[in-house]
Amino acid sequence: MTADGTAAPTRKITCTEALAFNVYARDCPSRETLFDITGRWGTLALTALLESTLRFNELRRRVEGVSEKMLSQTLQTLERDGLVHRTAQPTNPPRVDYALTPMGEEVAERLLAVIQLVQDRQRDIEAAREKYDAERA
Amino acid sequence: MTADGTAAPTRKITCTEALAFNVYARDCPSRETLFDITGRWGTLALTALLESTLRFNELRRRVEGVSEKMLSQTLQTLERDGLVHRTAQPTNPPRVDYALTPMGEEVAERLLAVIQLVQDRQRDIEAAREKYDAERA
DNA sequence: GGAAAGCACTAACTTTTGGTTAGCGCAACC
DNA sequence: GGTTGCGCTAACCAAAAGTTAGTGCTTTCC
Image 1 (cartoon, rainbow over the protein chains, first blue to last red):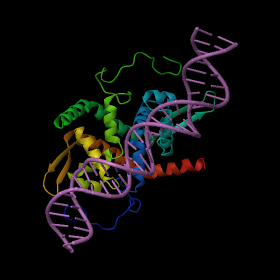
Image 2 (image 1 turned 60 degrees about the vertical axis):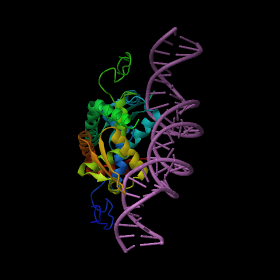
Image 3 (image 1 turned 30 degrees about the horizontal axis):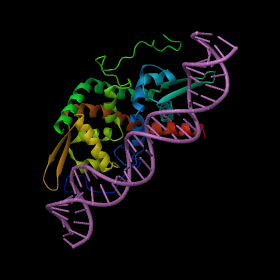
């Protein structure tokens, strides 16, 4: 142990070597996945799909403020990660449906728990902010 | 109802008007809070503090790869939101401890659930990525 | 019948955010 | 007496997010 109580600096082990993934490790691939999910629009898109399958523009209306580019990008990432399933019908106009995979559903449920807590506590959080700002004004 | 099944366009109501917060609404303050929490380092910092109170540089070593600037910035935001408590002792060298508030603990617990799921499913996710990439190679 | 809007995107460009480097003054370690 | 650690901040630069415009076809409105 070092002076401040952190672990002794033995050799650094990456998450893949350890056979378990650890988001706190610098180059662990699971961190990238976490960023895909929690990044700006990932959380909102995943949880919005929890209610029902949605078409591209339906989802875009649901998640207010997301640009077409970002939604498209986000959905592609989530599809690649196996969290969202995309079905395109080559009709005209095109119809593309987005749905959660079983894995995506699991993730979305846990994300929803975070969202609900945030919404419930928003007033407390705003109070905390006012206090913080007042203290150093 | 419009043709594609979305709700009729009645007047738009903001989350504060509705007396409930809704992260899907464009200007809802709860969305900002969600971004603070799920943004890049927020999740990792909050869950890292779940185990124990940590000093600035302890936390920095725990959350590998975070820069001093970003950690400092992240912690200030979380402190302002009332999720993290900061105690500074004006000794030399300074000693600053970061701990979760009760509210921060609640949030962190739910975030940890997401992290654990991601870590558990990382292999499946990587498999999905390989499949996705192979299909359009 | 002609204009406008909707569909699901992509490409090019700009702005915002995140990351990197350097520095602060002091103390303990070697 | 040079290095390291402490907890930051300021200045600068790269990467991510946002904005705008365009695609080709169809349906709806006037």
